[in-house]
Length: 204
Image 1: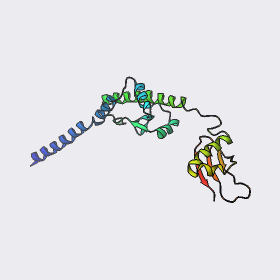
Image 2: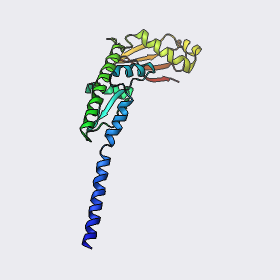
Image 3: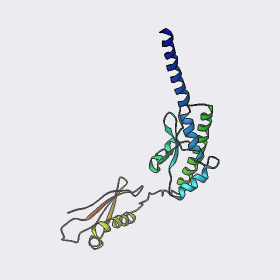
Image 4: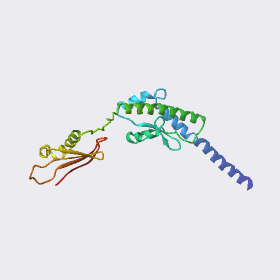
């Protein structure tokens, strides 16, 4: 009976050990397959192809948590804005020396790709010193362009003159009523810095 018990104990141990051995390279194989789909020798070729289809996602890896080689942490918000592509198989758990070398290759790829993408976005993203809506005229033109499809051109024309007042970085744009008229006017709130529309409404 003791021999039988030892046999089964050894069998269970062998099964568990072999399962561990065969499971270990899972990330290694996954990462190898991921890198095979990338131009690791020249990441800029991949970048050019993705940009041609308006894909501005950053490359991410997984360590203790997701991170973006080549992208400073204070710029991580761009990955939220444009999205990211995770290279599967990267991990803080190293399967083997070969797996570690693959992770290093993935990191170098991402560093080159992300730094080039960051420079491209900065180069083509001009930010005026006075913001995208620097003055009253610009704020009014933006508001009119939004009002007309909603309320109709004829109606908006009757609400002249238009006015815009800047308070705490926000343009408050509104129309007018002829003297003696009763009713509401179109209104808009626009952020001076980035042109974002906060509110569109019409008084009654």
